[in-house]
View 1 (cartoon, rainbow, N blue to C red):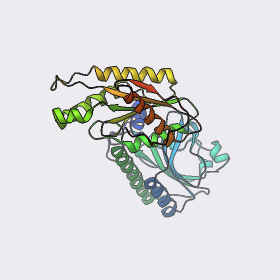
View 2: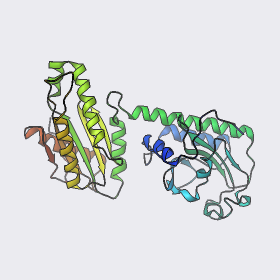
View 3: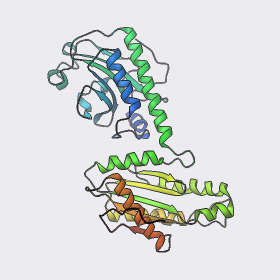
View 4: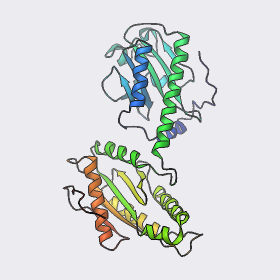
Length: 334
């Protein structure tokens, strides 16, 4: 077995789930970095199935999978849920002879798993958030060298997840980047429930930079980001589209709830008092667009942008809700 020099936390399920949630990777589209790894595993290990799995509260979700259809399974039947309980690989030569899995529906039925090799994907702070696994339809013994190799691939998966997180977090504000926001918008569009998208623009931000300097502008952005994060529920996402343009995605929110959040954020920003800049006044304009099943993510963003323009046209420091389900053409210039 391969040992992994890390402080491992197998009994802290709450912390493990928080570590997974912080990556903001669940329900994101497939990405080439992870697809390359699972394809390599199928080739090098000569197996028909390979997957990067993430163990969520009650499900096993596939960030990348080769040889299987679907995106998730129940956690209670997931082989990888057993893999995350140790730092070493879980190596099963014949699942029909293993009392933990002999009656598993994935063994007795499709895809008729027989042999399995899984390496836990472990964060820097010692939480196993998922596994990289190689699966065969026939009994076989995976060697110690193959175990060591799969552990190395699992560490590579973790590196890619960390790089992905760095790329998805704005360095100045700690908010999600535009790239991460767009991915989350597309993910929320695929969910069959209410959702609201808020676009925010800091009023006269150029004048703040011109009068007080760019250090003051950065301080404003950081304090405003704090307001967004303070008012961002666990299921929501707050991000920076670029410059002084910010956004919030509120899954599960109807119009009234979204307007309440928008007004709370607007008032909180207007009440900001920057210690180093006592004469500096900050306000924001907010546009809200509700999710419509007939739209894609781009159309949803256009509607929020048009609502933001209406807020600015009506004097700024106010909230406006998009009244149209027909997306604009972006001919409007703010």
